[in-house]
Image (cartoon, rainbow, N blue to C red; front, side, top):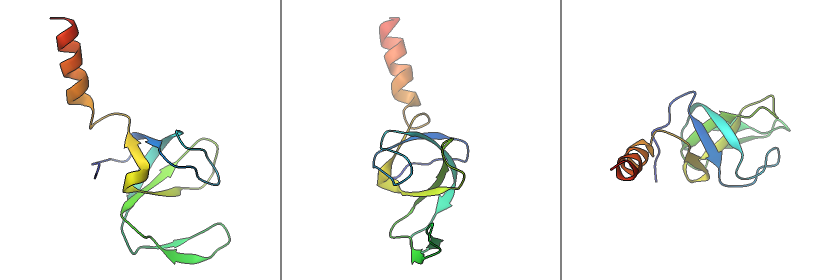
Length: 91
């Protein structure tokens, strides 16, 4: 499942992170590519295991990295379904 996020989009985290719990609302900042070098909080370098996104959250100062399958969009991908539901309710 691949989402076409844009910077500024909101997403819901689907997994726990050391700094924020699952089901937290985050803001998409930029794209993360598989194999991209990352640094953890202890300045340990590692490679991103999958494509994903850098996100921010009000409770943290730095960006966090999440994989594609670890985020659910809160707008964008669901807009057509929401519009269909509104049309069905209003006849």
